[in-house]
Length: 248
Image (tube, rainbow, N blue to C red; front, side, top):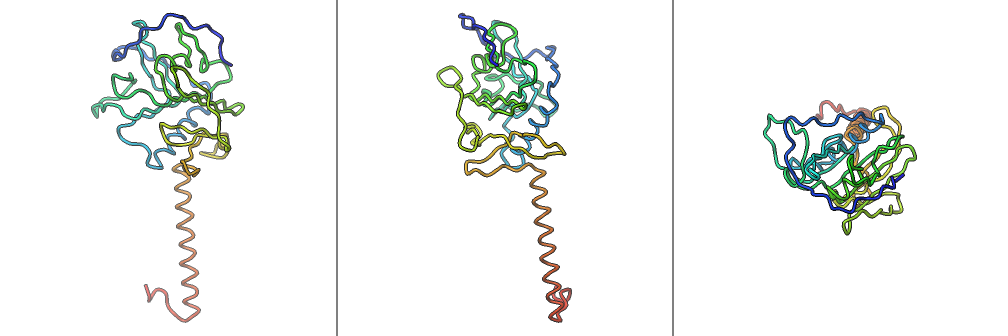
């Protein structure tokens, strides 16, 4: 449900400033036990298929920073993707990200809806800013995804003409995410002993991007099939009076 809050008419003054070292980041609780698993699965599939590069920044529950009317505002989406960021020293742990200061603008943001109103579709234009307003008007994120695991339902908004436009799913119920050149959709199945509705990636040809665990299982099955083939061949050779060990 979208909160019907009239946006303020005055355009906010937005700047991109480094987060002070002593700034206390929000520590909001995870409102849905599925949220961390959903985010991890999305990233796992990208990594397992060689689609993560060192210059990228992909994360979840990680602070995205903007300074609005001279006040620092931080939102921590459930999942996000930034194509290129400036590297940091090996001994430094990145604790937040300020777009346009530390690298590219944020390209994709996802929020997983909770049972109670969490502001994911709020257009509140005054503190505390609604998430939809923050991603649309402040960060101007090109693709904003919201997923309701209770329905389940998926919505994708594309930033066009300075505002978000809801996209229509294709015949398979999937959405094209141009920044990643992948389709995103809902898939029901098991991962890590959890049988739920997952968000998954498909490539432009419609091939599902497998998780690392699925790739490992495929390799295990391939190795088992190869072992069985070798055993059948060895048995056939013995029937013909040939010692397969001598051939080896």
